Length: 155
Image (cartoon, rainbow, N blue to C red):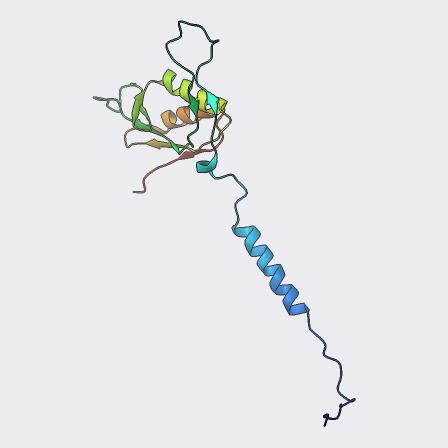
């Protein structure tokens, strides 16, 4: 036998307000925590290394750059024998390789010409003035790089 149908009960009403609030909060959360920049380690370049035409006397074959760029770390250290009274320029190192100011500018321009924007981290060691660190910051900006950071140690 079939149970009697109770006609006095109301139809089931779903309260959607709470669910809409939860979905909205999740949307805000994911927008807040996501990054809209391309990860640097996923950006690759396939630019040929040689710039000239193909001649028979060329000793180098064109190489293709397909590696991802990591952070460019520029370390400024005081010149050897430097005192606070002398005006010797600081020693520059790009990713642990000693470079001159002209070499640094050239390498930064080459990297910027590839169309990638790796983070540039400028690390002035104790004894280097803020003016020298800002000069290197300006050189990186003039080379066409935009993501430039200063790394300092806390005292």
